[in-house]
Length: 173
Image 1: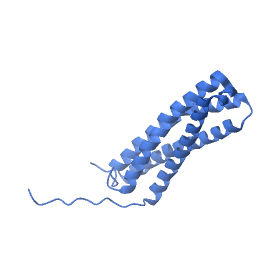
Image 2 (image 1 turned 60 degrees about the horizontal axis):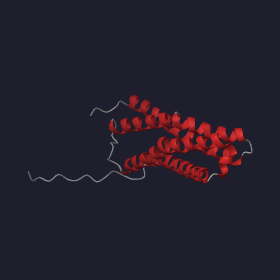
Image 3 (image 1 turned 180 degrees about the vertical axis):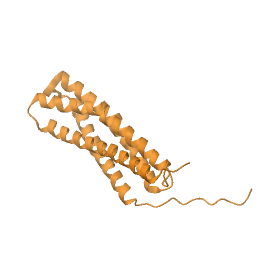
Image 4 (image 1 turned 45 degrees about the horizontal axis):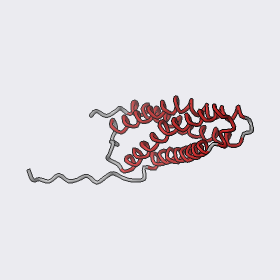
């Protein structure tokens, strides 16, 4: 397959970094909204936090995840790195799958559930065991998402694991 020119590779890398930065930024926004919802005495702010997270889960979380995955695959396939040549890329691929499950899938359903519970009951949702479970699942998901995304940034910079050993072809035909 034809490799990208240096200029095209740099532009694709910029797109990849922008989408990745949006993913990480939104994860921190989720953290801020969760902290705000946990500490507010205002029912309107409480509901707005979960509603905002739900909107983000439907929009920028999905768009940034798709953009990051597509540009990441293109960078792997159209450059020397390949999809399975290096252990650090394989680890990033595993973390990416984990982030897809946490971000666009889990956060969507968790925020939808939180919005539904807070819309119906407002602050009374705090007394509902289902809300408590949902809230803690969301906290765990947000923290794991931030850890996995930051780990991918660190791995991309340091590239800590080298190339996989290539199997030697036998001369038996």
